[in-house]
Image (cartoon, rainbow, N blue to C red; front, side):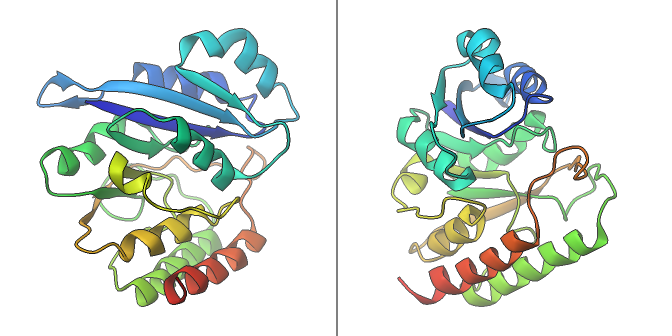
Length: 236
């Protein structure tokens, strides 16, 4: 078995080395059996030193690095990674150190045991460590999750989480369209429409960062998410 880890990257010169080290060092285990890892990095036309770091230091350490010549957005980077993955399962790993690669195994267990086809890592359930940050971001995430649940009839606690793990046959058979952060509500709406799909959640830790530390999502992405929730849940 193999886990494909897709890392979309844009202007992450301060964290790209750290996240690659963390992913490489993270054990992916099931009952003490190692699961192979495939690391696919997609550089979305970074303007800082990220690209030179990838070319000079990281390319030889991972399975594939894809370079976009124009900035297309996180969703487009994820699609590019999906096209090249060879693993049995897929997870997205942001490059900003907010999510801990040591928790891949937690997400894998329900899939390997034949209980789930998709597993979401929830930042808002469980007792794992969470950095205390922005109140209105938290309420915004709650609102978007509730709105998504109302349309999809799911009972997720964290629709916007980065950590979504899929069986290969699930994610590769979804026609994804969104180029930016709309990936999260779009993929949630589309998996909810798959007959007999089995979706699980597990609690994860979350080490959020501030805007001064490089956080990119903003209020405009919130309005875009609302539109995506309505569009992909109500229309085919």
